[in-house]
Length: 438
Ligand code: HAM
Image 1 (cartoon, rainbow, N blue to C red):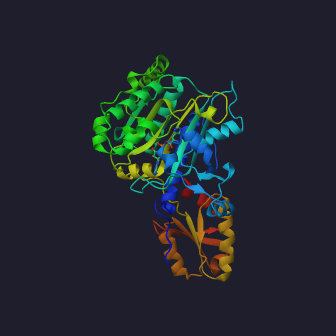
Image 2 (image 1 turned 180 degrees about the horizontal axis):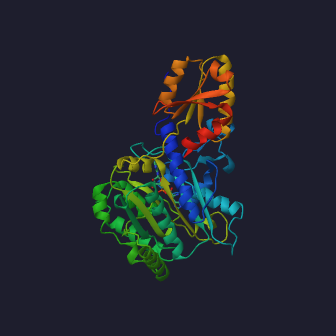
Image 3 (image 1 turned 90 degrees about the horizontal axis):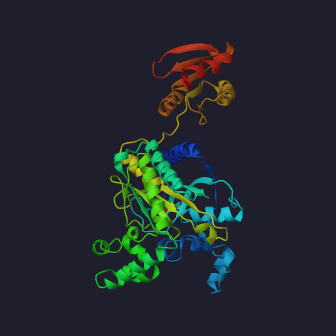
């Protein structure tokens, strides 16, 4: 049997892992300027956290979650026993529900406290049909801003997201930022009902899935992949025509602040997003090249009722997440190199066994001084050590042989010029730190 990673799940080989690290480091740099601090929640949670947070009628919860079963729980399932609530666990399909659960569990944002800003990066799991830009284990970077009700926080979050993409090097012209308002508990029920009625009126022309959605989650019909459904749904009522006064005002101020920031965006009254917790502002960033149909590189919105779902006091919140794999495809399409695998700066080549011991000691000292140093661990000949140093791409090789040991010196060979010089061993750190580290 040959072993391979499961379908839709990728190994992050060094080049890709390094690119992920680079993207995360840019997120850290940009998000820190806006006051975000790191939070890490578990890779799996009680299934109920996702059912309650994301919504039972969403595709993510209804169709795409991976269950997690201990040996004991799996045994119970085999004999047909029902699992207790705390035995029903699922891999996280997204990060917001877990953060909201943690906020309530640890009382992180009690009433009256300042806004809390958290960001995270990690694996998410959804059982979707794998294709370019769509995986079963994928990596998100997310940000959640908890306790902020004002439209200025919506604008700030959207601006931070766009600054992050721009700092990665993605050209502004290659990205489309869509915004919409989904209304709130006051105006959404009437809108939902209007869409439900529209679907039922047009049931004969819509696909079965859309008609079924009329009862469970009518707004999802806007996202149907069927082009003929899209044509019909284009005539459906628009949320922006049915927003209550407060939601309309909130939305208008968000757009005003985005204008103040000079951010280009498009209003898309059919942008509904696939998770049930959203209220008011929603947004999504799509790219034109590199991704095919899975072209959303990030999205998010406001979720003013989510904290209450987990038993907390009313606490507004909002946030977004981006998909690292999709960002990498977008960067690739624009020929942007995403982080390089670091190469050692110095290689220490030893002529004989005695020199090897000294080489080992010098490597430790140089590394402690901050240099990236490599040496031979395969008992290679001197010639082969030089070949290896060349392959690794080091800029300098330190040669240690009997002559050097006798005179407490080392020979330095600079690889690009071929220049050689003999220096006292105790000056190595100073000499190498200078030209190589600058
Ligand atoms: P989402 O739109 O479901 O939102 O996911 C955010 C991003 O994750 C997407 O725009 C996409 O780039 C990436 N993504 C989603 N599914 C996959 C997949 N199967 N394969 C590869 N990449 C994928 C959320 O997850 C919300 N939690 C965002 C949020 C945070 N809203 C408020 N706070």
